[in-house]
Image 1 (cartoon, rainbow, N blue to C red):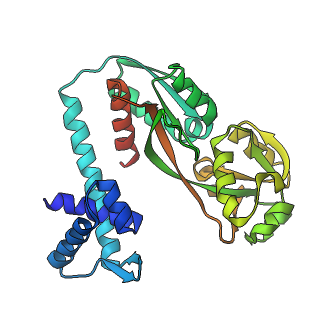
Image 2 (cartoon, rainbow, N blue to C red):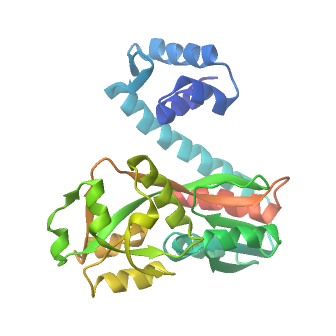
Length: 297
């Protein structure tokens, strides 16, 4: 019973919205309010500060959220391990992944999956988001992992790993001396952009729209089809590029690159598992559970 109350609290804490939490959990908003009040009564402390229709976590709420996420990670691990102990798994799993995911997120997951399930053969198709969705539709792959903003009705989307797209420059770029710029300044900076059909380009376009900036207004020096080629280009030019934070961790650590903040702009997204609507295939479902388990360890 209390575990469900924690699920309610977690949904409210992540959404900061009682209505959205109720919709997510398929319960009424008064039920959400009741469960939150019961937790606050149990701990004898407020978890949320309310200001009209807006809410935010109190320090106690922040602490409970941190421990709740740790507990949920333990529960996921326990469920996964117990379910896999009594089963043997063999067969072939055809994966598809967009370029950023395939290069920077999947390799450690695939290595760990093969170590645990050596009898399962995996093939990986890498392409941009548009092509991976097409491969799923044509049943070339069993499951995909993509980035992007648009959703198609024939595809089931499941959140995987959170990502942030940041504006990156070579550390010695004279334009990088200002570590924070105004949105309008973005139009004057030479940029490397991904190719049409890229999920990253789609997400950038969606994020810039509220600022009144279109992709066509940006000063595109070149469009390149891979993050690695973009990073190498940056090292030999005064361009900048929007890249996944996952893709530049090493360069940031080695101080080869830096992040340029854009005032009022934050580009966050999820990588998504994509599957055909309907019952999931067993190996595909196994991989989803394992990948989620591996990403929270």
